[in-house]
Image (tube, rainbow, N blue to C red):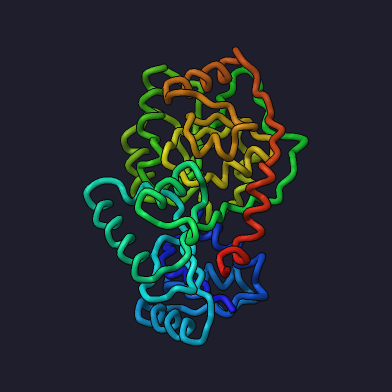
Amino acid sequence: MIIANLYNIKATNGLFYYAADYLLDNKKKIKKVLVRREMFESARVIFPDLDVLECSLYRMMKEAFLGAISGDFLYTPTSHPLPFISRQLIVLHDTYPFNGTKGKLKKFLFQVSLATSNCKAAYINRTDGLRFLRKIGVQNDRLVFAPNKYPNLSFLSDFPRRSLGTKLTVGLVGTDSAKKNYDKLFNAVLNANASNLQFLMYGHQSPYFLKIREDFPSISIDLISSDSVKLESFLCTIDLLVSVADQEGFGRPIASALLMGVPTILKDCGVFREFFDSGAKFCVSVEDVTTEMVKLANFETELNRPKYIPPNAIVEAYGSVFKESKK
């Protein structure tokens, strides 16, 4: 049986929904789900048929080690391996947390934990995650490709269509950290004097979001709460989805937008190319992204709806993760 350790997930963010997909698709194999107190109610709602335990740090470790002694498999969908447990799969989502001075310490602790556990290490993309794990010395026999699940969404026959005199509604996804590069985007918007754009930001009212809105008072920026509004509903209200992040691990909302036929512009980076090359429009720089938005807002170019099909190899890899990790 599998014990799912979600203790290090602190919000209903991309990490949470990544884990939810794997657990719900394998719920007959799940023995219990370990979460911290502030996530208990959210976990009970999304996992109504699973045994969800509210844990302190001590209880989480106790449950994990007792499970290991009993022969259970520990699934930790974050980069937090517990030492001395070899029947364990951890997941690296992105390498952003390992940057900078604090990141060096996190990287060292991560390497020590991997060395003392001898667990399997999963990566959600080959472009960044696999390269990082190999660079820090993780051997191939410990590596598992565990990509995100593509959402089961269908192409919309209708979506927002602007008329002359209205602003272009641009959707932005995620409010968790500076890796989203919203400061660069909005500075480019100011420099372009693009007054016919309005932005809807999907996520939580985080310190990062509040600072962005304070720093750019002249730009129309509204928050759509991801706890109150479903992603599909949000995507139905926008003309265009944009991301200028360059350190993402995947981009679940981007995948959803493309599957629904929402026009999408991305700043060119390896991870986005790995997953969305056949659907999104790519721009070399933030300034180029802004130029494209302005052209669309001015009706100089058309909003071409993508017809996107997820790569078969990634869909197949998702379905075989637990089988491969237990070998």
